[in-house]
Amino acid sequence: MRALITGVTGFVGSHLAEFLLENTDWEIYGMLRWRSPLDNIEHLLQSPRLHYIYADLKDESSLRKAILDSNPDYVFHLAAQSYPLTSFTAPCDTLDTNVQGTARLLEAIREYQRERQAAKYMRIHVCSSSEVYGRVPADMTPITEECRFHPASPYAISKVGTDLLGQYYAQAYGMNIQVTRMFTHTGPRRGDVFAESSFAKQIAMIEERQIDPVIKHGNLESLRTIADVRDAVRAYYMLLTVNPQPGAVYNIGGAHTCTVKQILHTLFKLSEHKVRMFFEPDASRMRPLDADLQIPNCTKFIDHTGWSPKITFQQTMIDLLNYWRERVKKHAHLTR
Image (tube, rainbow, N blue to C red; front, top):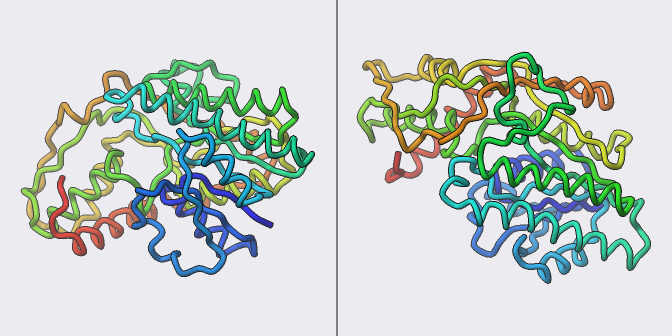
């Protein structure tokens, strides 16, 4: 069996590659751009089963070649402009990468399958996001897959397009595509543009006395349901291997719901720094509009696959903080 992971150097892509190498005998093809940093997969570079393909979601010919060269049985489409806050300053790039990029990829797969009459064999995961739900009224939580879309950022709007494209190609062309709407997932390698990872990074820098004992933050009142990225990639594997249903859409998320403020306080309590820390609002970390009640109903996916989260919230926070402690010690000149 052969699997193609788009965005293999990213946070989730690197963990998925790691999971598949440890739990299957598949040949893994990781799609990355020529300029993608390799930090997240540095420990995997010597694996004889992990092969690298240079391609870009903005370049149709490179995507066609990636499909041809990998000839995959499974496709995990994770590549994206994945930072909601960044999307406010780069909305057009976000839409091009996430919407048109997904269309280019699915069209390349469709053409490849049509030429080889192999549509029923390739199983495809299109990664949408819980951000498509946006600002959900309290009486509509926990959020089911039937909840209407109310995206609260250009990123969320782009994921609405990604989501609908996955469903369209499944329905129109009989492609075996499943769409996931993953809620907040974090852990080691999480980008520092996300709140909890930024908190962990700042705490690690304070512990090393690289910055003053001040943690800058954005909106602390948003409610999030947290999953560990390692549980998330196990869910993605089960999505395509446990009786996959073409055109199905699933919510996936953790079991621990809390505010961003509670996440900050949890990380703060884990700190080895004994001097008082201060919390300081930072306007640059505030979204113009925020998705604030992210509480999922994952019954549909759990009933279908038997998946459930295994890693506790506390362990995820410990591992995230330890990841940043190692990074900070290794790189003395990180910025806040």
